[in-house]
Image (tube, rainbow, N blue to C red):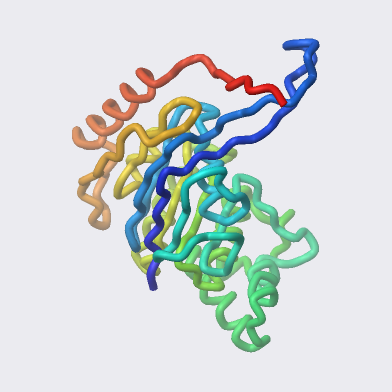
Amino acid sequence: MAGHITLDGVSQEFWVRPDAAETPDRRLRQFVALSGLDLEIEDGEIMTIVGPSGCGKSTVLDLIAGLACPTAGSVRLDGQEITGPGLDRGVVFQQYTLLPWRTALGNIEFALEAAGIARTERRRRARRYLDLVGLTDFAGRYPHELSGGMKQRVAIARSLSYEPEVLLMDEPYGALDAQTRERLQEELVEVWRRTGTTIVFITHDIEEAVYLGHRVAVMSARPGRIREVIDIELDRSEGADVRSTAEFAAYRHHIWSLLRELASPVKVVENVA
């Protein structure tokens, strides 16, 4: 399985209409989300991305997912230009996006139906990935019968079920309580150990970024660029209490300092259309 991602000189611009409360001039204005962003994500690593609010983190994920095309620059997966969505990339959003009329198992099978997988293989693979996220006993439950954490596990299993090269995660644990969030972080690391999938994880939580990331990319305020990529070297052996170590605290403080330095008022480039 491959999964090497390259963003080379990526810029992304949008045309937006200003809020009437801000200005009576309602003409479209150019909104620069990203400018000259460069980033390499290695095969089989977990790359976490943090940055000030509104810096374009989710825009980066949309570009890798193929949900948008850059205004300038290129986004490539294993050397091939990304021009749209594909089964080589799975996406997990903050909202669970499960079908309420399907069971946990049925939601995973739905993704495999769309991929054209035969019925017997669909069922076998859906059960395998439900087991991978620890929900074997909940296969027949409907979304309204599952906790928030369980719903997100089903969403992760669904994205993994068609065995993508890359798993893209956009603040998937943001709405969960602290205990559930930590447990799912630990489970994601275990899923990565068992699958080796390249994971790109967007978060605003510094501790989450340090705990999950083999490397942490810190973005500047808008227009977003990569300010620094930090190698995270921690004892990740089973049972290790990573969060309590001095090394963990040092990484956290370094990233916190960077974000504090980068914080600046939001600006819009006002090229008027």
